[in-house]
Amino acid sequence: MILRALIFDVDGTLADTEEAHRCAFNAAFAEHGLGWQWNQRLYTALLGVTGGKERLQSYIERLDLPEVERARLHRQVPALHVSKTRHYARLMKDGRVTLRDGIAALLEEARGAGLMLAIASTTTLTNVDELLKSVLGRSSEDIFDVVACGDQVLYKKPAPDIYTLALAQLGIDAAEAVAFEDSAAGLLSAKTDGLCTIVSPSVWTASHDFARADCIVRSFDDLFGLRGVRAVHDESHPHRTEAA
Ligand code: XBP
Ligand code: MG
Image 1 (tube, helix red, strand yellow):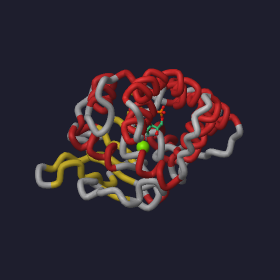
Image 2 (cartoon, helix red, strand yellow):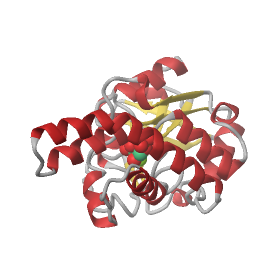
Image 3 (cartoon, protein in one colour):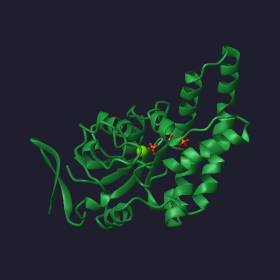
Image 4 (cartoon, helix red, strand yellow):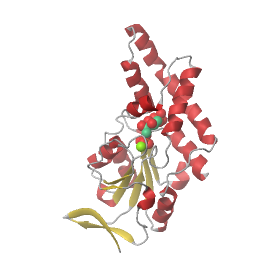
């Protein structure tokens, strides 16, 4: 099989965005008069649940509350998440978040090598666009051939659904693409779809299990150049890539 596309996770992979997400959640809690504060230690644990709305729901389930109050808070989740997304957009505009090392070169070299580019993310399209406008001055559809994200699928990572959707929209098989991830949930999602997956842990996911990764790098900067690289489908070493 020939390599035809690179598929990127967003949060923690394209950029280290989770501190901005955490601050956006806390700003939304304050706006809604909730006395909640997610510190970095708690947020690292909560990141085990993908999806902001799902993370809020799992947090509410952890609280020691009368059931009536718990039900009221669950009903508040959609509005809370809308507020949080607005705060995240505001934080993206302050320009403090940058692409992770190596990502800009990977995107450029992939284009130069004639590869398609896709996103497979749990976050919302709004967040993807706000991030890319902030770090590259362009929207997601200007850069990526396919943007699969958020509620486009019912089951979020670690379910394979978002990568299945990205591959379908690319019109290719898993053997023709490589996925880039930062978390155990993202890795499991990509591997369940049979994708060769390169992982670079983020500060939030350093303790995750990446045993199934095809390649683990400290930084995406460590990857070889893509020029002239093609995937050689060798039964004994599927997804082995070598310089042409
Ligand atoms: C990471 C997530 C997202 C973000 C928060 O997505 O799990 O939920 O933490 O964004 P990925 P939302 O690594 O798949 O890009 O609040 O929009 O979900
Ligand atoms: Mg991620």
